[in-house]
Image 1 (cartoon, rainbow, N blue to C red):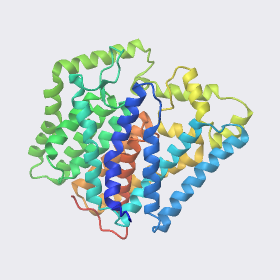
Image 2 (image 1 turned 180 degrees about the vertical axis):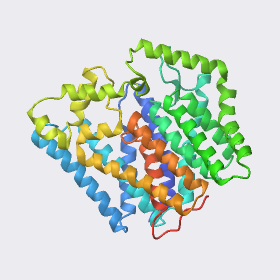
Image 3 (image 1 turned 90 degrees about the horizontal axis):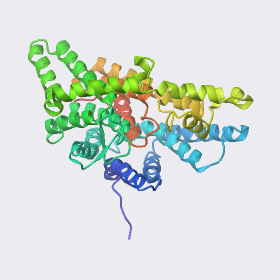
Image 4 (image 1 turned 90 degrees about the vertical axis):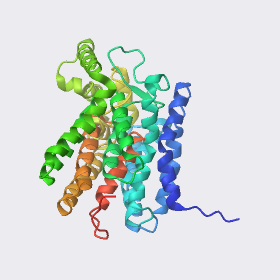
Length: 415
């Protein structure tokens, strides 16, 4: 019997299941089972999507070139003695290929109309509701804390392992839910998404919320001149009133005190280092540790190898990874992947501005700030490109922006 698979529904299903892959991985990790099942599931998704765009020869070829390029860089690292054949190296290579290919794959799926753009946006938004739900019930003992043994740091991770990638994911979802008016009970989910972002306890989440508030207010001041006073007031109320209701003024005071205590306890030297949570010191530890002729000769071009960089960071007690994404790209695999991702970010933001110039809708205005926030998070906080959860949402936002200016499609209208 022939089994017929509805490609569009399969794509939406994989998007919806994306957070559940991470929940399974996080729960297994807490049981001391370090099995990257999230990566395996996403490789199935990657291969399936890549096969689906086979008729789009340009996009299919672009993904093929990414696969070949990243693989050749790793093979060259092995050949000159920088890297070696190991499970961790292969997993990282797959993760890099997966992340770099997704924007092109999603763009092809939209342009060839294998998926409906508005339904795709809905799928992205609905898939994050499990994250929102798990974070919102965490204070009641039904989710995990981000910092179990640190009295200076507060926050929750819900049913997941880390909080940083949840912040980046929710910031993308928040951008789209502000645009998409077709989401059921949209205002309720906006409220709870704000709550979830606050509950992560991350500085990036609060900065992102402030950024969205200012950006929406600017739009109303510029485009809604007759009623801008009322709408500006409503913007402040909608964003900040729920936060104040949830955490209260005493929590805010306590949070500020904890941040000051954290600054003193960890010996931060300046505000910049504090805001980056010492991530800049991770880079310094790599630069100071990796020495030798092979690194001086090849490292500046093809990178210093994933395992070498990770070992340096762990040896210097600077964490478990090089968190800032662009530094990670350069030190892990060199200039070519770094240039690829700079181009991906630059193209998406330029297209967002170009599309807004053609159609000054709130949706196109919000894409600009959404992309800016996710790029800012990637550059300074990381946990976007190398996180198998977050990169799906970042790639979706990038593809949506790029698809808006396609010559074969009209400029996007608000859903």
